Image 1 (cartoon, helix red, strand yellow):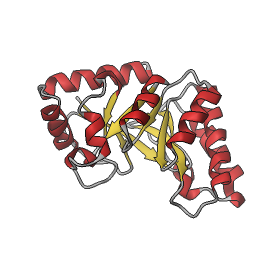
Image 2 (image 1 turned 45 degrees about the vertical axis):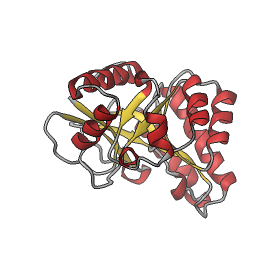
Image 3 (image 1 turned 60 degrees about the vertical axis):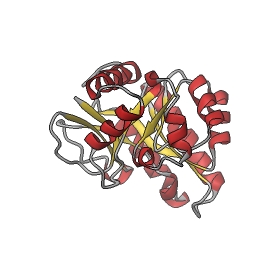
Image 4 (image 1 turned 60 degrees about the horizontal axis):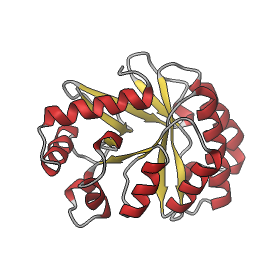
Length: 219
């Protein structure tokens, strides 16, 4: 079974497990046939609705179909005030710890802060850095602090930082995703397996084990 660790739109692909990302406004309409991550994206943080949005995330975390919080995180390229992003992010981290849910992290030009917050909170649950694209040094620091790295279309851009990190990182900290990028998850697995000189079935087993380690069970 393939695992797509981060996707916003449900799709049908044979023998694939999707972790569907849902924003707070849609968190009241989940079904028992899928698994979800629910979180307030840094682009969507608004002071006027923050209390209600965080309440929706907390309520969603009570649902056993919601196995992760996110995507949440920090983005220095959006117009949303950074202090407001930090506030929303830290509140969601507290929810994740309370309900023992791993966190799906969106990070743009804020990796130093993500690492600093990780050390400050010293959370017991893992974080998954989705769409990772940063240096080997940053990757090493994240991996040291109980984070997983998730890769998608960046694997097809061989001059990207993500590609360079992927080639040498420990596979027991790896996830793969599509993130609605118009690519087939099977193609991502195929590319990843080729770059790591392994069979797809071997990579599939590794990522299933990673999922079980991260979430405690393979749904």
